Image 1 (tube, rainbow, N blue to C red):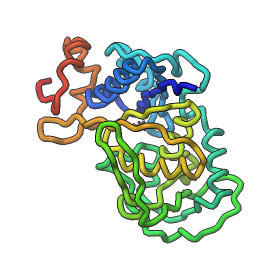
Image 2: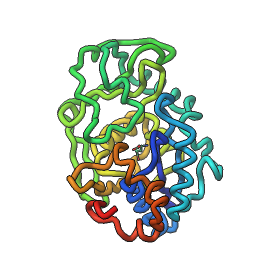
Image 3: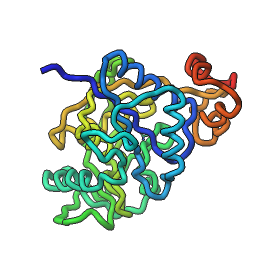
Image 4: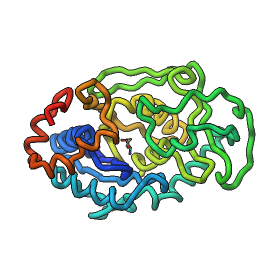
Length: 282
Ligand code: GLU
């Protein structure tokens, strides 16, 4: 049977979208159009502390203003609803149980800063530090994840390889490029890695398009897919938009939010046709 292309846009409603996000989403949209595929919009409002409904509304509106169209999403529905991560907890919980039963995860009581960031995608600059392994041999017969961090025990020294559709063959060594990562936070919030793997699999995503600062997360996600017996989608990691100083765009670049550019009179066509390696012209 023909494998129909299914792509996704996965914005987090933790701020306004800037031109860096927009370029990645535009690429995802173009690749999906070229493949005559279906595009899914998933609201990655996993972290209750950082996600805001007003940003969720703004991102849908801004993406639509830019001209991007999706066929499934929180605003239009679809066969894999709900499309908001905050409403998909039971899906992640099932995966947590499977990982525990199969011996892939362990409870970790270390107090670490990465607890606060695990629900967010670890973009290169703020990637999770390599865990020293203190709680690694802990066994558990827990029936719920609440109260401790849960970490995935990575196969130290093993190279996780995949073919990136833009960058070619990539290889990341477990234990060196990334360590035992959090799959469930002590404050009972599932981590980005588990949520994204479950959602991409359940929503039948065939190609993931995202920024190249998530390459190491892709290696982690392949480990999770293998542990859970899930298929690995194709990956296309986009180049990042940087500012005039070569820094990756971040929330502090609010001046480059789509909102601001729109208010300043830029049209979607101007934004789409003008992105290059940096956006200093705005
Ligand atoms: N919501 C994630 C982010 O903010 C998406 C990462 C992904 O595409 O997997 O970057």
